[in-house]
Image 1 (spheres, helix red, strand yellow):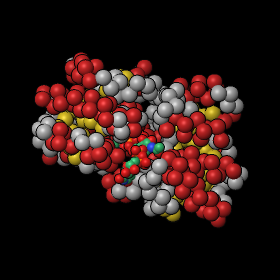
Image 2 (tube, rainbow, N blue to C red):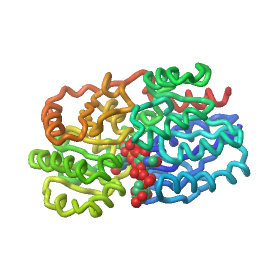
Image 3 (cartoon, rainbow, N blue to C red):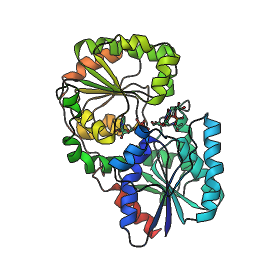
Image 4 (cartoon, rainbow, N blue to C red):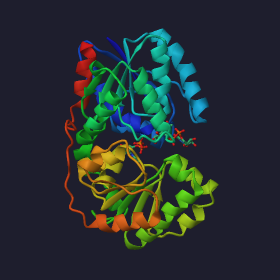
Length: 361
Ligand code: UD1
Ligand code: UDP
């Protein structure tokens, strides 16, 4: 059985790594890997292939950056001939990025079956590009692999037949558990002169936060207070770095001596930074899940989350973007009891379950 796996953007690589490993180990599966090229910087792409032992892609579509329409259309037009040439039995798409919907749509129209990993998640906020990608991808997929019970409820509510839905756990956590020991050995915390539980870790890249000058500068107001009391490490996403300059915020950030702006770091280094942080402030999807497993307080700087289990069972706090609220929650979370939580099936074996179901499908 020929299975073509699709990846394109940073959070896809952590999800694809265990899927490729499990598929390669399966006697009756011939896996292929296609990289769309949505992310292309060394520190947004190649670094993860090396650190996570992902085989080099069989093909890179090299689409690069662009508006939503252009990027999605470029992926589709470059992916179509690839699919026609290789005619896999299945394509596997992960997550909610433009590469996910673009490839799923091409495959569905050519009659190639689509499996969506991380299906069913809903923020119920259609101003998020990812929410549109999730709804559309799920609507045209043949198999829906779900990471948490809310996803099953959402799909049922949308009338998806029970036979398509499989609660299998979380492939992102497969990768976390597989790399935890290696991350322990990273010297990144010490090399920055930081002490465990003595710093805050920040990531930001949602357009609603970093493309809007008012919102971005409100978040910086909060970080300006926090960095007076605790060092803040901020591996900055390329979108966010570009916006600091475009919105005239770069000099303000440069004046914050406790805020350390660094290039994006590798998975192993980021896992070490997260594990030993006092608190994480983020608008990332995946980091809400990682902090839950690690028992590190997570302040999610958004008004909603598509991953409610991280609040119900984990360490996630939905804080929004009001600076006073961010500061107040940061203060209270510093004293929080740290208790790692493992939601059902977030046990390191999600990819094995998925590959078994695919092989029998
Ligand atoms: C994309 C995903 C988002 C995901 C995020 C993870 C969509 C709609 N968005 O957002 O869901 O959470 O990736 O990181 O698919 N850039 C570079 N180098 C790179 C990649 C991007 O400089 O290697 C810059 C370019 O200026 C680009 C901008 O970042 O225009 C945004 O990249 P893009 O892939 O369009 O969206 P992200 O914000 O990265
Ligand atoms: N991550 C990383 N280096 C960084 C920032 C994040 O390796 O500098 C990892 C993080 O541990 C998680 C993933 O990238 O596994 C999350 O990706 P991102 O926040 O870009 O996307 P999202 O999850 O929001 O879609």
